[in-house]
Image 1 (cartoon, rainbow, N blue to C red):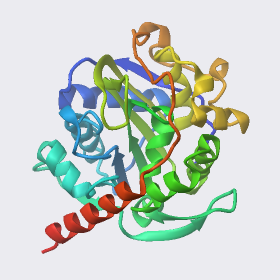
Image 2 (image 1 turned 90 degrees about the vertical axis):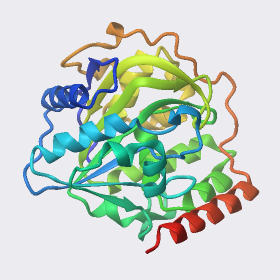
Image 3 (image 1 turned 60 degrees about the vertical axis):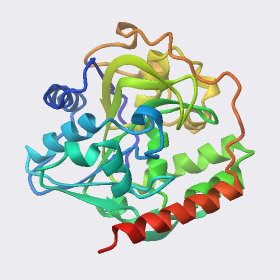
Length: 313
């Protein structure tokens, strides 16, 4: 993934209506100079953290995922949708949250990120990443705006953590849990390994006060997009009126001098951050260590295994 663009497209959108969102996506892609040709293998990567959340605020909204799928299908792309949830399987979460229903009738393929490829990150750490996002032609990141009790807020860059396979994710939490900076560093190290694409962000109804699983709805009324997830994170922190220095992920990007981390260099071809009312969004004031209970890890492993057995023919 090339981290060089500083263009971020912001649009107002207050309702989860597939056609309306698809029209917004069309405007966003045109504004940031993103296009796709027929026959392209496109992987949509929503946030499918878990189905065990009130009103499913932890996941990208079904109508948002459907709108993205329709936009790419209309341009002749071959669309696959997948993720590596913390609990359960991608197919199971999509079914429970209504995403599978929203996509009913569309010629898309569902996949679990369960075929690993061992890679070495820039810092020397090895990790098992999913084969699907590494081998697609275009990777489409579909995060939802959410508060995060360990990392302050989760936006574009954090959503790529789902490309790490299965129990590798809770292992990262266990191993690097007391060092948010190191955890963020490894997250940012994932970016150069991934294909180019675009991030289309669901900020119509965000999750605030707590997260990433249990929080309260916040009507932000925004959809956004960028080919550079770092730039999108920087812009959204401004939209939400949050202190960028409290985001370990943004701080890591800024310390590396990545394009898009400097707010003054961001270009807004559509609306600007000041055109949105995000100032009442609440992120956790006191951040917890990025840890993961070992018992919870075992429970997650059991649930993942049971879900796969259930889905097997």
